[in-house]
Amino acid sequence: MSLLLIAKNRDMNPWKDALLKEDPNLDVEIWPRVENKERVTFAVSWKHPYNVLDGYPNLNVVHSLGAGVDHILNDEAIATPVKIGRMVIPSLKAQMAEYVLNAIQNYRFHTSRYVDQKREGFWSRHDQVPKENCTVGILGLGEIGEVAAESLLMNGYPVLGWSRSKKEMNGIQTFSENELNSFLSHTNILVCLLPLTKETRGILELDLFKQLKQPAFLINAARGGHLIEEDLIYALDTGVLTGACLDVFEEEPLPNHHLFWNRPKIMITPHVASITDPKEASALIVENYKRSLSGMKLKYEVDRENGY
Ligand code: NAP
Ligand code: GLV
Image (cartoon, rainbow, N blue to C red; front, side, top):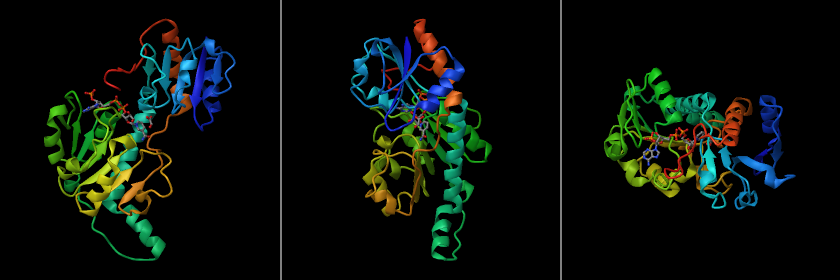
């Protein structure tokens, strides 16, 4: 039996090294140089090429290198009996919590504006956005959303959270799926930490932005497919939103000609909010590999019906 590492445009050797350090007896292959496809039962993927994995007749599991699995579920070549695993490790949650806090502080203290002003040699002061105008509403109170919410609360921000099922969290007002309107009407800073599914695709659109409390700001660190891009431009141009911080895009890398690049109200980071560390992730991958060899349920196994 062997474990396959498969990704486009990414050096997977550090992953192989980390896995072998975790268990030197593993047989690890890196796509596309695979000696024996029949021996592969477990694939670890980050944005793998589509219509390739159906060439592996004994594949039982496709495991994401990250928290998200939309890149796996969208590949029709991964048939239903194949189980899907995903990454749930402390550093992914902690990094995202820091990213969101940083994006909020940048918005409140006009950091990007001052960077632009410095480039132009221009002295001009802007009022901080007061905390009372910074109620943060988090879309998605899952593994990552929950930790981000708690960290913001500890930093003195009023925090709300929205998820399919209602959560109980100390100090955080939570809303369930059918309470979205009420959640939005109390939110100034909307943070998207949802998985990309057929229900959540395009959720960040103009009518939703219009329901936010003013002043309103958007942070999308989940997936580009959550956002209707032209609605964001319109919302920024008409004052529905004051600004936005985006880490993820429908097309990555964001193309050179894209409208977002020239918009000062949009802060852009290149999908770096939270990056999986091979050393930390290897323990979970090896555990799930061994579970799969024993026919056990995976840790953090994805529910294909829900899409996350
Ligand atoms: P998760 O544990 O699966 O949590 C997902 C949350 O979203 C849950 O609270 C779930 O509700 C909620 N949800 C799902 N569908 C919903 C719907 N239709 N309506 C309302 N709530 C819904 O996921 P996670 O590990 O926190 O990760 C979230 C996403 O972050 C990933 O899928 C990935 O796309 C993104 N991410 C991005 C980066 C980056 O670097 N930019 C890094 C890591 C992750 P229930 O709790 O009720 O099920
Ligand atoms: C990153 O985008 C992840 O899903 O972990």
